[in-house]
Image (cartoon, rainbow, N blue to C red):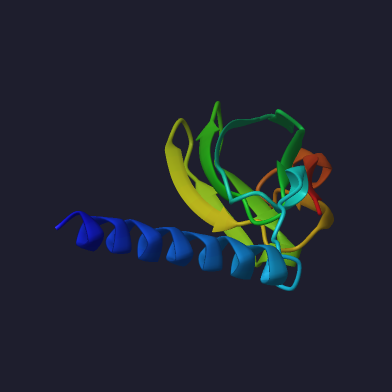
Length: 134
């Protein structure tokens, strides 16, 4: 009986040793994926924007590439729009209303934000920017 237990112990030790040897021999051949700060998993960003004669507050939105951006747009006075041509976004908000929408910031760069409504001359001066860090 003691011989059987010793045999099992020797076999288990040999298996562990073989596995350790295989790991040592092949670990450098397996690719290692390391994520730096810019390659981490996408983050959901919440941004509250107020449109008011004749500016966006905040005027600059900064996110990382691949973030899911949720914008809550509020009009403080008359109807406005939040337009970013590079992302094909054109959202309209009525006077005193709020609208929410989401988009994936999948393109790095700086993109102009503007109001595309023309009900008042000041609407043409409403400008902001979206900065997507790659």
